[in-house]
Length: 251
Image (cartoon, rainbow, N blue to C red; front, side, top):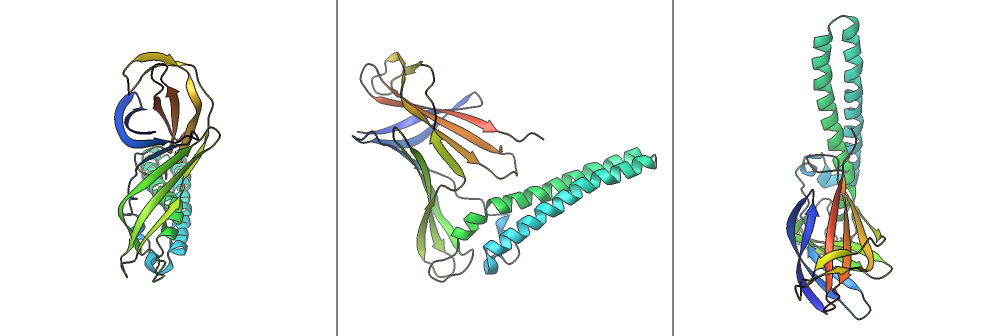
């Protein structure tokens, strides 16, 4: 059985449509495929000598930025208390705010670079062996394979070397942790095939996917996405719902 579905994804109380395909075989294996996003490389492009040293340049620059940012951030508070002793609280406060913002920004850039080390590793060309040579030529494919007892997510990225033109692809889970969850209470579901509404129990244990993001920009620290499976009590069609919860750092 193959079903092309536009599922409703819930996020912060808002509903958006997400297009993907679902394939189910006789072994009750469910495979969901959809398109992901090309990785933003603006910050990576500024890493010194990344084209020559690749992963090493990314790691060194990342850790240096993370350390320098932490030193500036913590040092700004020391300066602040020094100005308090001189009864110059306002000047110390301004310096503390500026130092905190600059320090935190530099630290987050370092965190972003460390987060992308494996991505940089994947961009080494297999033919000409140049570092940071691959560029993504199209949006990646995301595949979620679910059975009664297992759940795995893989991302396939498609590359083209900017030096020799070699076409390649790589597959990995990246920063995604996937596992089976536990069933919840029965809920009212409208079948996407027959259109009838009924109280359905979950057909199998849900799939739980936790994706981490680098701590930079407006994005949350990560998201937990739970996919639940319901079998229509009228026509037997397999319906799915998605629940998304954002993870935000406590600052």
